[in-house]
Length: 131
Image (cartoon, rainbow, N blue to C red; front, side, top):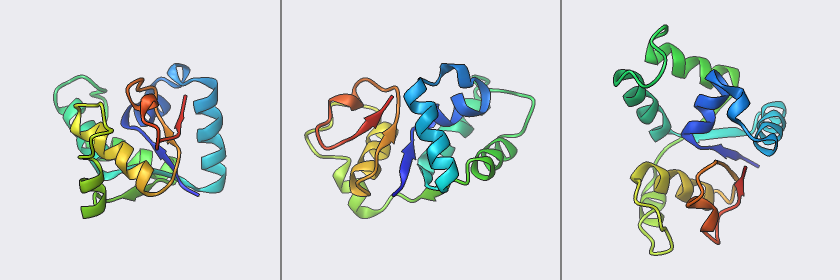
């Protein structure tokens, strides 16, 4: 079974692991061992934007940063499908961030837990959030 990682979880793992909760670290370690960690392709877009704006490291290229994440965590990168895009627009989403809606919809679609500190996502009944 896949475990989906929210974008900030990938960044915390790479740059500031102390920010991860114990539950999140445990889920990441188990997922790493099982090679079952995944992220949505839009997470790479978010990381590229953060790096371009100077809000993330500047000692490495964004391409290298993302490739390192993908390789070190053995990430499966999931695409936005028509089903996920449609699911992300359902009324039960109380989140205005389109990327977060897509990430959560991906976890719901795959019946996978989502590692995320996002408090708004914890209130979605169909979503299992690990933090």
